[in-house]
Length: 332
Image (cartoon, rainbow, N blue to C red; front, side, top):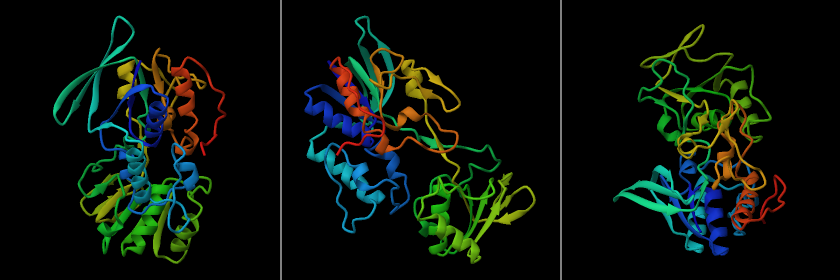
C-alpha cells in the first residue's frame, strides 16, 4: 500500500513521521515549501498556542526565553523535524489531476519545476490547511498594488498613512506593530468593538491603550466602499491612506476536495469525514489537520494543537483498525 500525503504543514509533516515509523510506504507533496502558510505570517509573530502544543512527533520545541514560539522559530523547527526524520517531501510539486483506477487505486498527475509526473497510490490524505487565499470584500480598488492582504513587515509602512480593515488578530497585530514602526494608523472595523474571545490576550490591552492615547484612530461600525489612489471612502467619510491592509480573513481553496469528489457541507464548506478514521465520503481519501475546518465564517476554532489526534486515527485506519483518541488530545 502506498499513501499520498498532500500538504506539508505541521500535521502533514507529523503524519509523514508516523507513516515512516509504521513502515507504511508513502509519497509526500506540497505545492509550495513546507509550512508555506506559516511563511505568510508577519515577521516575529508570536503563536497563540504554547510551544508544547505545537510540537510534533515527540520532538520538543525549545526557545531561548521560554515564551511562545515565533514564526521564524517554528519554521526552523519544521525544517529540523524534516531533517531529523529524513523525510522526503516533494515541495513545489502541485497535484493537478487524479483518476480512479479499476482496482480502486488512484493515478495522480502533478506538475513540478522539472515538468509533469504521474504516480500510482492506494490512499490519499489531504492535509492542505484552511487558509489558501484572502477573503475578498469585492470593494472597488481592492486589487490595487498599494492594497495588501498579508501583513509581513511593519517597516514597509514607516512614515506612511495606513488604513487597516478588520478587527481580529491579524488586524490588531498589524495596527500595534505598524504604529510602533512609525506609521500613522487608522482601523476600520464593521463591529462596535474587538472581541476579547478572539483577539490574543496580550494584544487587546495594547491596541486599546493606543486608541485611548490617540496614537491609533479607531473607526467602529465602518467598512470601505471604494479604495482610490491615496484615499478610501467609508460610509460617512473619506480618509487619506497611502496603504490599505485588508485584514479580513482567509478562505480555503476547495479545488482538491472537488478533484477527489469529497462532499462539502454547510456555510463553512467543511469536508464530510468519519471523525474516528478521518476518512471522507470517498473511499480511500482522508483529511487531516486544519483542512477539516473548511472556511469558517467567523472565528477560527480548528488549529494545529487540536489536530494532532488526526495522525493516530489515520494510521490506525490505514492498518484496518480504529483508535479511540479524544478530541483535543495532544501528543507529548
